[in-house]
Length: 387
Image (cartoon, rainbow, N blue to C red; front, side, top):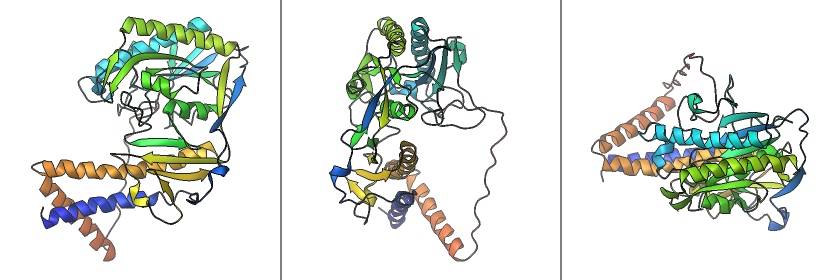
């Protein structure tokens, strides 16, 4: 390894460290590592019986992901830009349509659909031309967070989640939480994104009543027995699965969605409210990492997890988002390994090291000027959820 390569790799590591250190400035004081477990609530959340007022109709929000679809066994089908992605869009629309059919059969009067996947497609992952015309896609003029920014009093009577995945460490198909190598911890329990959705909407006593995904997600959601869950495939690895017969799975999606609305109207659904005092955390495993924070005084870091107190679920979610960004600094090790193996890698690493040093010299010499912000073109594009 050349001296320039070593410098470049140290520079990448330094960049990761800077990202990780930024997580210390999150607007809350980290929980001392010695805080006794007795301060943690007996249960991570409480359950609340829900009897919605349906006198003005039954409004259901369908939030979809794209890893837990029926007929799906190839990760490239949920990855925008691959030749397989259009097939994934067809699978997605078909599953959503099966659920929409059941929701209306159960008594729903209005169904909205929001993108919770964020494939990178500037357009919604679910194509309008393939979607049941009775379903309305949720589109806004400004950016919004599909998990938290829609939660308003009586905005919906219930939420259905479609095409979801198991949590990080579950050994499910494409199992993760939020993004690669991330786990989210609420009051000592690692949760799925489905549970995060339920806790978010639970702030307004709105329940999640339906879900679909693989067998590992079904196991993850054992603590939500009131939801109608459809297992559409069996995970055989993080990048492979054994799908059920598609027609059979989609028939079950429709029947379960119908039962879910019936259960809601009968008062059998439950809303989930986070217990206070709240301790949240982010667990980072390869390719992510928060290991550089280990040993820093005042930081509660153990078992690859950084824990912190939060005064509300919204506050915890804000901090989690920043920690996820910091943990992504660990991806630099994969970048370094990829560059070393590429013929142009040494040159790229050398240029990176040179540019890093130049920025330092310019700043210290008073020559540095911040890059001009890039103005986003006015395309008239609206926002459909995660992008």
